[in-house]
Amino acid sequence: MSTDATFDFSDTPEDETPAAILNEDFSLEDEYKPEPLVPQGNYFANVIGVTVDAKSKALVWNICLDGNGGMQSDGETPIDGKHVWYRNWLPRQGDDQEMIKTGTMTKRQSKINMLKRFADDMKISIDTPAKIIESVEEGLWVGLRVIAAVGINEYMGITRNEVNKMVLADKD
Image (cartoon, rainbow, N blue to C red; front, top):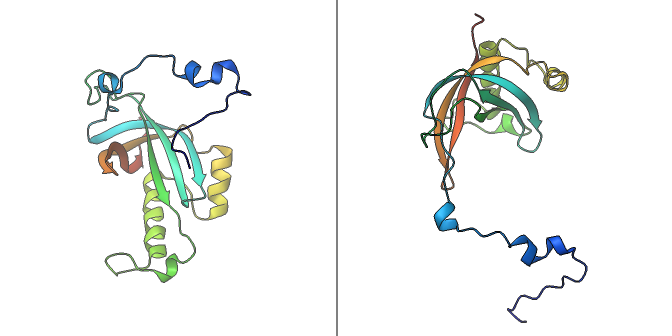
């Protein structure tokens, strides 16, 4: 087996060949710039989308920070306009058989309790999977004004913003 890479580009359009793809000059060392982060704190935001992530069994809220002023960690990118996500973990099969780390309740009960607190804080109805699906499909939550507790988290060597809590903002 040869370790030399060989490529057959006879059927490749000219603009997709390695030479065409790599004709733009760049330098990772000179140009790398980490993604700026929003400082930890509470921020106003608008819900711009809600989806159900079937694979991880979560309700995913896409929110856009708005009306806060200030700059992100790079000192040049505005906080307003930054998209961050909040996840509600939904019960999954087997959660009723597994205890949470503290051993005080099942994972199912913990997720149900967190969903109830979230629904109360957001003043929305997520009583059943059918209600969640209906609300997502009809876009009922898009446009809600919220206050998001944004934090900073490191996962697998990547530092990023996360939303730790989200509540409906009081109406003016």
